[in-house]
Amino acid sequence: MTAAVSPRAVLEMVAATVPPECHEQIIIIGSLAAGYHFFGQDETRQVRTKDIDCMLVPRVTAVRTGETVAERLLAAGWSPRTDGIHCDPGTPSTPDDDLPAVRLHPPDQTEWYIELLTIHEPDDERDRSWARLKLPSGHFGLPSFRFLDPVTHEPLSTDLGLCYARPEMLALSNLLRNPVIRPDTMDALVEGRAIKRSNKDLGRVLAIARLSGDDQTAEWPQAWEEALVALYESRWVDLALGSGSGLRSLLGSGPDLDEAVITNNTGLLSSDPVSREQLRLTGERLIHDVVEPLRQAAKAGKRTHRRK
Image (cartoon, rainbow, N blue to C red; front, side):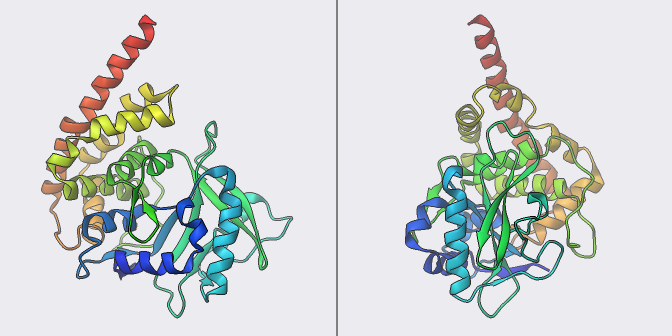
């Protein structure tokens, strides 16, 4: 079950509890970052989410930062999430892949929790990897995910000392992570339905595009190209050329698009729900105005590389 939270209020709580010296090493990502960007200054607008994702950067200090942040939150009365699998602290002999993630509820409520993540190793081709955190209560895991790195590219700052991911980088990351629609589903049901994770992720791309508007999305092709070159210099062309394949699959499947509509209308677009046709039109504009220009830039880059 997701909770309706005020993006501003949640960020204020996190900023007040996390050690100030760690603020510059945390980037808020996910639905809370998008919600804060679009309506974080409107106290009447809320985001429905169960997890507040915090990316720890840079990777070389992420374990130490994670241990510091977790210990401070626990000392301030935050409590570990206890429902679901892999919740009990591990031991030195627990395999990395079986370690529980750091998921902590704020004091006196369990509707949402903070989760700590970090950046993937550049050459790691696995979908998810784990770094080990050693806390007084036991061993935990700090996960990293393939193609989540764009959310760390040139983040935006807040007046609270924390940074959050740019909306266009959240969208790019979700596109890269979902070149096809995978069959695995979300842990929790949404309106009684099992939703494919890919449909939720790709649906969020469309929600962000819809909230951004045409003037902002017109700037995305250049922003995406710059991020891809900076993060994946040797393979940015291939990534750019394949960036819209999952989105095209979503738009071509009524049942999958319906799932994206459901997750958006219960999430980022809950204040302004959309129909399947409206979301499909948003997707078609995104492909025409953003994905195709990026592909053309990649094709030009490929020709240039060959000439060299």
